Image 1 (tube, rainbow, N blue to C red):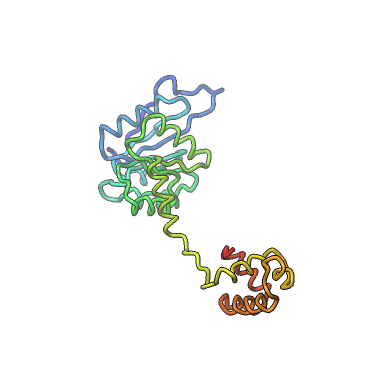
Image 2 (cartoon, rainbow, N blue to C red):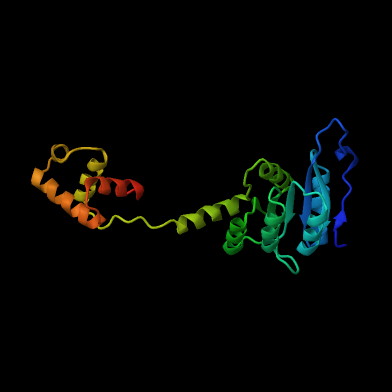
Amino acid sequence: MGQTGDKVRPSARMTPSKSETAPLTVWLVEDYAPFRNTVSRLLNGTEGMACTHIFATAEDALRSLKTQAKPSAILVDVGLPGMNGIEFLTKVREQAPETRVIILTAFEDEDKVFRAICAGAAGYLLKSADATQITSAILEAHAGGAPMTPSIARRVLEMFSRMAPAKTDYGLSEREKLVLEKMVEGLTKKEIANVLDMNFHTVDAALRSIYTKLEVNTRTGAVAKALKEKLV
């Protein structure tokens, strides 16, 4: 590999005429030569795509990014010699914000997935993805989507589910929750008493307890907190 990476000549049928739309240009950053060659052939054999540069290291790709036309997309492995794929992704986002960077790797542990997403990855595919999944992912990412291998997508959903703040009910009793629900619906104390078949004074006591537990001083404050925190 030279500092500017290897230029890959697209297949003859991929060379557009002046009247045709130029293909999506894709760079590939992958240190394992057999896989690198397989993917580049796949891309150059796909209508509407051209793998124009391949690199064994992130450093070589970044050097080319400074002097060459920015590609539509970059496929990059996470585990590279020297700078890893996630560090590379961050630098590409700085130098070529319009280029969509898709992780194509064997790593599927949550830490790497999470770090890649936070760094701005346009997609995350495993190397077990077939030809159609890889080419479709490039098209989807170019169109603004976020393609992921199904198993990775499930992991992402699980991660964000665990990260969601725990819902709290502030120790509200079942009666207080019912009263709060009716408050949110806009019912007066008298109407709440009638609907819930409660004594007016019982409703009034429940309201005072709700205010104390929610740490608010008004009905409006209680309703606003209930809606914001989805307490009912």
